[in-house]
Amino acid sequence: PLPTPTPSPPKAAIVDQTGFSFPSPEFIEEAKGYLQKAGYRVDFYPSEEVTVDLYRALPEKGYSLILLQSHSTSEVVAGGKWEKEGKYPPGPFLFTTELYDKHHYLRLQVDDQIRASKLFYEDSPMLFAVGPRFVRKSMESRFEDTLIIIGGCQSMAVPDLAQAFLDRGASVVIGWDEMVDLSHNNRAMLYLLQALTVDGLSPEKAVEETMEEIGPDPTYGCSLTLLQRETG
Image (tube, rainbow, N blue to C red; front, side):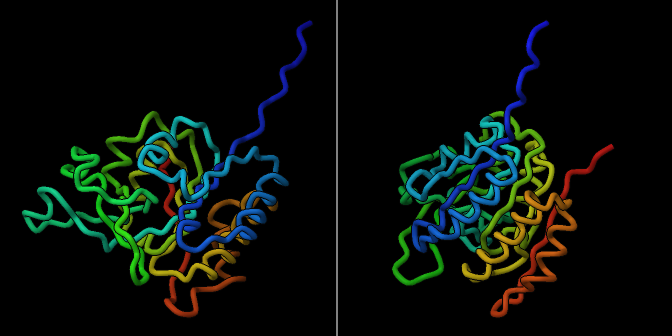
């Protein structure tokens, strides 16, 4: 008889865009530790690799869980026809670490798939950020029931980005409903990861326990929330 093949371990990714402005190496190592303890093979993308093309290719990499440790916002600079017509479709948008160039990604800019964005600190450079239309129209392949966690401001302030990920094949998207301080985000993300992976809680229960233990952001009052793909 042929030997029984050994099943491949599930894959997880940590995309660390926030390291561009506020490196948190201890957070990254602890997050990796929880995932590895739960049996995941972990790929880490440091800030210098967080580009438009990385976001484009994420679905085809076969991750079961993705932590997008990324600044995000609904308040970005629209371009192309949207700016001329005074229309600002909903975000949120996820930051890359690519410096903005009005001559680069022209088609994506005109179609409002990516925008020029600035981080919320003085002298921040203008960066490219990808939005819901980019997820729906330019990402390659589909997610395979991937659980996506967005550790960034306003990532669930409006549902369009989360819904775009679900439409692309993700099963659950978890994020913040308003602005969040990075230190509070990091504490919540670590608790959430442990609850989801090591403790094996459902996404709903893991979010509930995280909010009970860590609580809302003391400065901005934001909470973790989630959106799930409908089944049946």
